[in-house]
Image (cartoon, rainbow, N blue to C red):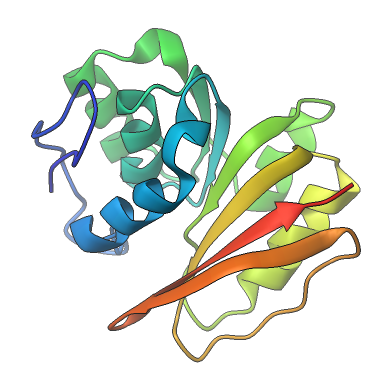
Length: 177
């Protein structure tokens, strides 16, 4: 797997052989084409980060910093080292609930979420984002999920865009207030 854009474009990352489903290059490219220049100077949160490809892609494309939440971050830590972005990457070794709770009162411009498909995580995580006030006004949550997976949005959030790419779908949600 390789970074698709920015200062580290083409750099190869490590991926776990089991337990992680990294975001495909076509999906990552689509996400970053949609959010465009919003990534430049952004404070980013990557939940269920796995190998860290979404957050590392954001850093490569100009994000100011990225906080990664991952229970088993060994591959993620190696990728941060490979790309030499330690000063912009902070890793919280925790499950998503504990990791998010520890972040308050911090606020983010972009939040990536790539949880296991079909387990109801998107709705749960959106509620925690709202409860802990982790997203800035006009911030975006980028959710990767299974194409048949449905979830509700907390008050003050609205769906901005939805796209499907084979076995993956992305939903971009904006915080309006």
